[in-house]
Every structure is written in structure tokens, then in C-alpha cells.
Image (tube, rainbow, N blue to C red; front, side, top):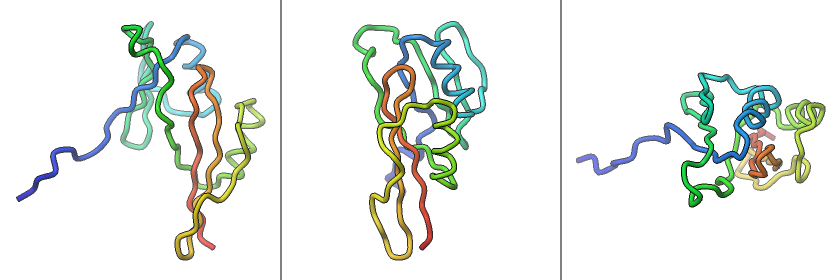
Length: 125
């Protein structure tokens, strides 16, 4: 008997204050693939998951989003490319844990809407 009701995360919503500014950041700076946008929402493809930027419909939804951890192959190279694009980082890439022969690296940044997100990478040592 399968008791798992939730199978996967399909879409993540990020509240934004300025849809055009946020659209430019996620498309041009982070390089995410835009699926489509309207005057109040934008949808990006993120390896089988959708990332939705949206102007909050109600004031109760107008708060910072959860931290989204974007997986990258090479965190140091990606960090340097995004620094060149003026993405505002909070820190530098660093090891957060070591499990066996694998290190997990992270670095945190802000988007144009003051949401905090992170890049993460697993490195074989």
C-alpha cells in the first residue's frame, strides 16, 4: 500500500514587487529559461520544476519567499560569472558539510526583490 500522497514539488512561487525587474534578473542574470509571462506573473523552467514569479494578489502574500537552493555543477565558476553580472552575494562559496567523499558547497545571494536564495554544489573529494 502506497501512503505517499505528495510525489514531487512541481512549482515554486516567489513573490515580487516589480515583475519586469524580477523577470530580467531571473532571465538575464541567472539565465533561467522563460516559459511565458503575463503582466503579473512569469514562469521559468527549472529542470522539471516551474519557478513562478508573481505580484502578490493580497497583502498577506507580500513577504519574502523561502530560500531556494539552485543546484549548479561548478559553484566557484558560477559564482564568478554571476558576480560579473552584478548579482549581490551575501557571502562567498564555502563548504557546509562533508559526507564521506562528498562536500556540499553553498553561497547565498539576494534577488532584486530582496529574497535570499543560494547556489549549491556537491563536490567529490
